[in-house]
Image 1: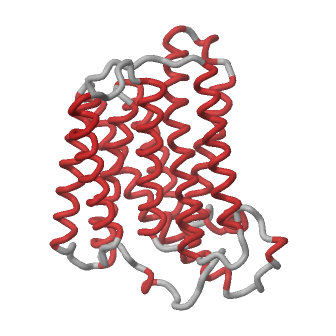
Image 2 (image 1 turned 180 degrees about the vertical axis):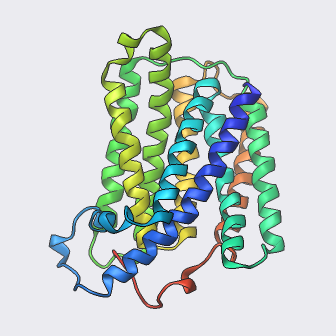
Length: 308
């Protein structure tokens, strides 16, 4: 895996972290402000994505627009990293955006990161390095269209299930945020898969890229972005970011093993190396997600459960 791919994945993680901090703060504040004025619609009339009602307000906010611009730059860096490297390794590197989000949130709130934050950061970094060292050298192949289509069908089914569960009346705001953010993570996994497929098609000729993967590639990041904003408006940053941070690389690891890796993991790597990397990353993510540095619910109006 080229060093350029690693550096670009890290750059994308930084840009995504800054974007998340800007957009979640604005989206959550807008949702709480909006929910205090009009009465809630009956459960049967609630839209699948309540955040659509906030878009007019969000696009007028300079901070939210700045976050959107950084997200676009991060996506561009992410695309090039995926083209140069292995999807499993690149998506795993993006997990460090949670680490950057903690530091940025601490700076925004004027507090210092806790010792557990640094411990969690070290755990995530070691886990990512271990995973990259094991899977990055594996030769990548481009799967058949039928295999990609089957994978997309499974992802679409899971996304529909998550949104249906999130839409159930009486669902707690944080639970709803976690379900929607998990769906966003799946969308970003689909985007990563299609980026690899479409960039390979472009390398063989422009006409080869004019196929259904390109159309789906246009839809998947837009859907994921809408789900992210909906999740940000529904709950706290830790809830949304943790669910998305876990679901994206896990789904991408499965996609990498099933679709792109020429040689699946085996031997000690399968029973020791990969489980150790996953355990280190998961431990760090859980510690960071439950850190008081990242929890900023008290910065917003108490008792509100916007978009629930």
